[in-house]
Length: 209
Image 1 (cartoon, rainbow, N blue to C red):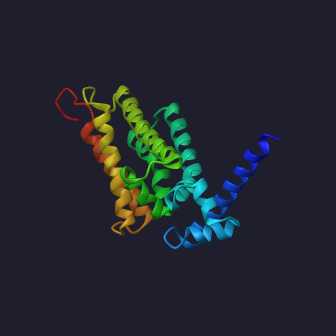
Image 2: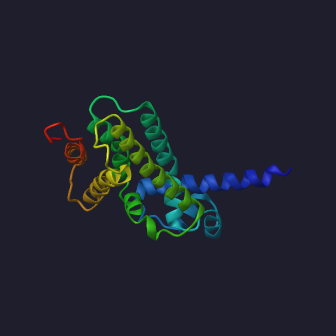
Image 3: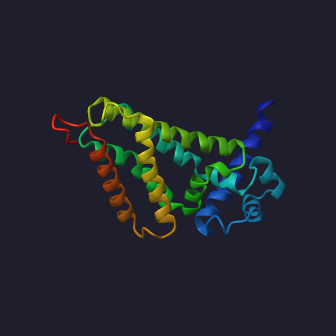
C-alpha cells in the first residue's frame, strides 16, 4: 500500500522525537548525545540524522508544539483585544513565553541566537513562530495606539521593538543568573513595560503624558 512507507516514516520520526524529549528532560540538552537518542529510540544513528539535521533540530522539534500553542494563545488574546490596564495586557502576552524559556535554558539560548541556526525544516518552523511573536507584539501595540493609550504619531514597529528589547533582556538576565527567581523576572518585566507605556502615552493639553 502506498501509505505504509509514509506511516512507518512518521512512526520512526515520532519514536526518535519521544526518545529525545525524554532524554532532554532527564539529562538536559548538553548531556544528551545523538547516540543516546538513537539507542533509546531503537534506531541507527544515521536514521536520526535522516529525520533531523542535527541535535539542534531535535531540540527545536521537541519544543515546537509548545511554541505553536503559545503563539495560538497569543493570537487569541490579541483577537479578543485589550481590556483593563494596557501594561497588564502587553506584559501578559509575553509572560507565558518567558516561563517557557525559563524552564528550558538551552532552548532559550537558541532563541537568542536565531541568526546562527542552520537552515533546515524544523529551524524554519521555529523562525516562523519567532516571526509570529514579533508580528503579534506589533499588532498589540497598534491596538493600544488606536485605543488612545499610545501617542498617535509613533510608529508601531519601533514601539514594539522596545517591548521586545525588554523581553530579550529578561531572557538573557535569567539565563546568565543575573535574575535569580521567576517572580523577580516577571516583576522586572512588568515594571519595564509599565514605565515604557508611561513615556509613550499621548500628551494632554498641558503637554503631560
